[in-house]
Image (cartoon, rainbow, N blue to C red; front, side, top):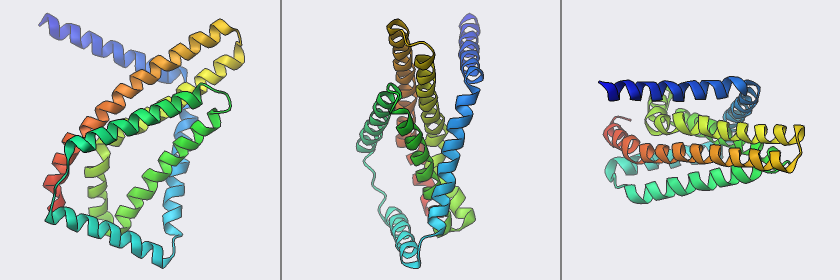
Length: 217
């Protein structure tokens, strides 16, 4: 009973820290979220403005991929896990480097926008090919569990970069710069742990659900 209470207190403390962090940086989170949403909208608009040849290619690619998975579902989970973790590590390193430099802050915005673009383009492509009902189900099965962690993590990384930039602009002493970079690094490390956990979810949980649902798509 005592261990349950201790775990509950720890969970409450973590939630309190996260909520406090968001509240203290609500402006930055709003900006980063809007940039991501703009990226999503651009992805949808981009798909809607493709010519007939391009939409046919997308249709054929998604349809053939689904049919291939239905007929021969063979996914190397270990290889998929390694690839996903490698991508997440590379993303965090890039955003850490960009967020640690004043010039790189613009690139952080572009990366967030690009991630939103990819998300919007992918989901709208699936819905376009499979129809609204099946498209939404397919998107939820293949993308929801991973992105419910990954998207907030990407936005949080961008916010950490913004916060670092603001702090350095307000106080350019070497001691403050070093302290803020250390904080930024620790925060990025925490986000990396969350992203790695999303890789495990994508590999083992999402793939299991997808394997069960693929024949109904």
